[in-house]
Image (cartoon, rainbow over all chains, first blue to last red; front, side, top):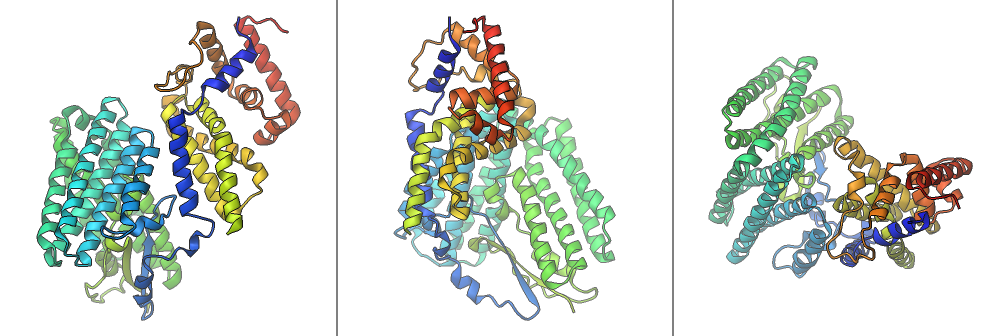
Length: 380
Length: 171
């Protein structure tokens, strides 16, 4: 006969972390406490020189939405290939981070974060006009391998019935890939490494397409999960558009955007009824981003119209952060800010005093610096 | 700098001492090993972040860990409720590859664990904290925001219920 004492003792003795789990976790925490000590604010920001070069006067406010880098701010995080700290970053920090993520979903999230990190490195290398060809090629290979692994996890998760996780990861990869594809393409036009960047951009497009198609079963499950979300987002945007007081031309512009969204939505609905899930997912990726961006634009314009100067900036920051969070819930939190590159030019146009011609000079999304920069022309 | 060193050491020894406690707490609530591991780690990360920012008294680390873990569990349930509310009894018996198994998974033991997981949440929590984790009744009361008397009553009732279900005679 088992006694209660035995029972409690057994539970105590047998429900515990394995030795391996314990030491992995400890290694992770040790890295955490040692690289982000109590005086972490004294670690110099790699973006310091950028800040000092920005002119904050002249009625132009520069709004920086700083991308959250997660719990830890590793010193090596800003290291690039060739730097001394780069090996520490990819060889130690990232490995520990990955090993410490136990579930499949968490592992995939870490992978996405690292994929994005690699893409940022490529972009930064291009800006710095680094001429070491091999490095970009190596990083490209690394990215492709990681992306493939992440797809596998998506299929596994969907196969195990965890559609929500499969969908989250799937959207996460796709939004990272598509955001960076655009950036790389833009960079490819002018940067020194143009050809390589364009090639990588193309590879990302192909990979992203292959991924959303996936296997029939995964694609179907994911499509259904997305359907509900899109319906809700679409309605929220329509409601907001109806409710808010807007300048006529702004309303017209946003209504046109809404019409485009509706066209896409109808298209995707047709695909669903025909059980063409892979294609549906491809449109869903695009559609979802579009709705959230339209919503963000609307919210921001309303805020700016209502407020002045400093308060407007703060409120707008909150609105962006809020929308970023909304997007983040759909995708991978760490990467959401990159995929959320709000159309700064459109925002300027819509927020400027009626009738003013605004030069299309808004500096938009400098992802390399991990900021979303929007110049907003303020007040009289 | 010295203080920072002190905090690091205290934090890591708290990990050594309480990682399993936090893990058990998360595991008993989620019934899922992977989630429980992630939650355990997240608990420590959050506690460290708080230490960095606010530097609360180090003697309270155990209770503090418990509170953080409990909040994480609450968030988890908010997110996952429909799926996991009744997954518990099976989960806790899950065999772990590579884990040193010190007991035969006897039928008796399984029944006992099942009886334990069937207890109302407030009973199970009180029993687990007092008899498995070794918090004093006063400490449990403080952690759960209840009066010590309430906790004693819960523990007594829980034990009575367990004995009844398992046909164990009152000692």
